[in-house]
Image 1: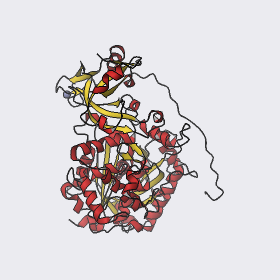
Image 2: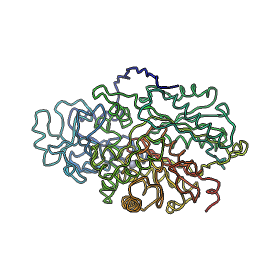
Image 3: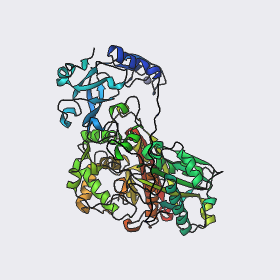
Image 4: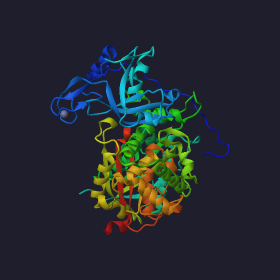
Amino acid sequence: MSGENFQAHEIRDKIIIQYKYTMGSQSKFFIELKNNKKLLGTKCTKCGKTWMPPRINCSECYEPADWIEMKQTGTIEVSTIVWYTTSAFIKAIPYGVAYVKLDGADTALLQGIFSENLVPSKVKKGSFVKAVFLKEREGKMTDFFFVPEDEYETWINKPEYEGGV
Amino acid sequence: MPNKVAIIGVGITPFRARYLDKTYFELAYDATKLALDDSNKNGAQISHKDLQSTVYGIYNELFERQFMPDIFTNSYLGMNDKPGTRIATGGATGGYTVRMAYAEVASGLTDLCLCIGLEKCNDCYDEQTGTTTPEVLNAIAYSADMTYEYPMGMMAASSYVSMVNAHYEEFGNPTEEQMAFVSVKNHGNAMLNPKAQSPMKITVEDVIYSRIICYPFKMLDCCLYSEASAALILASEQKVKELGIEKPIWITGVGAANTDCFIGNRESIGRLYSNIEAAKVAYKMAGLDYNNIKNQIDVAELHDAFSGQEVISYEELGFVPFGEGGPWIENSFEKSGEGPWLDGELPCCPSGGLIGCGHAVGATGIMSTGEAALQIREEAGKHQVRIEKGRAISHSIGGPGAAYAAIIVMANEEGLKKP
Ligand SMILES: [Zn+2]
């Protein structure tokens, strides 16, 4: 049992697994994002619900959903600004994240919100945002982010970013 | 008809920031021994050899640095050659583990079952900051959707804050001050609980001016991650009689539900449908009324991982109508003042909850259930509340966007009889 003279032995370790992960039938979303700066959602062939993130089957109807191109403008449903976070993101603080409902979508997508003036009032519910894309894209969610509508021109004129389609 | 199931023993280790002198399975051993001792004080004469099966609540393999940590715990607890099953449902692991252990006994599969939760998170270590928490948070963040949400820097607080912020947009509460009341209450209650990690007498200002974590949650709005184990021994009615248990606490209702883990898919972000559904199912099974539950129970141990979450739980669990959670705690605060805070219309988290005790994820919901059981056994110690109806609930939520929820309703012998 532990007493006053107890001495702990600690071992340093890490767990690393590498992947080459298939996105399966969602692959088209990432390919179109990477190659053509398109944001694809899906629309149920039966109930008409649009899914974003996309799923090729409607989880409500158990019927197929078709690919559709979404608008690149949307509205913030809910947001926060993060000031303390995980080891993987701590160098990025403060950063904004929000659930954004793209115009015409039924569901909201989590994305980063970039702003020259990152304060709660700038990213509040109902704010209009537009997608900005990295010039160097890898086919990942980090290939794009949203900015307040009035900052769009500023962001797409930065050397590493560009506007969508 | 299911067999009646009772909690006959409760064992909870202290919740601590870090145990340098114990591994996760050693903590589990301590909790099991405490639960056996408690059963034996309660009239039984049993040892671990009498336990017929185990249900393990262990959330995160990355904390324990071990996949399938249950089987190594099984060995250390001397439970070889008996069934053992692990549950992992995020922060709701504890509540769900109680539900599954209940099912083992209610179904007649076993009639003496060990229901144990454990977690040891602070062996995670972030070399860049030289602290544990960012790496603990990273180990948790892998529970977010890895493709769409993890890359956005999603973590527990920024996920849970979404519901609180959406609730505020819809109803104008909880305000930062109303959230702070929860923190003052739960840190205050923890001062009466010797097993709690964060006992503190603090003011509303202390909370509001503590370090910002993610808007509008401040440091003191958030629970701390903890290390602990908690165990319950569950017995069938037959076994309760056979063992001569003096104060059985009957599990009268279990309810659970998972709402959409993608917050953006939910019809309304400002409420947890899982909580509402789990509560309705559990209360109905216990013969209680969702719209009158506040008057039918003596105490609730809630899942206050974040202060604002406790406030909206008041509504989802049926204590007050939607939109009235913030004003409810504000009124109670005006009557009770700064904590400890063990009376009022319905005492919530007399143990200190997660904010006061700490959050040892897999152990937490089992600690809450055990605390609620000890309350209606009137053996909770210094943080004992007044027991009149003989009924209590425990509540667990977890997972991405708090998608998982589980509610346990329990009653003492009197509580079974009273309307
Ligand atoms: Zn459909």
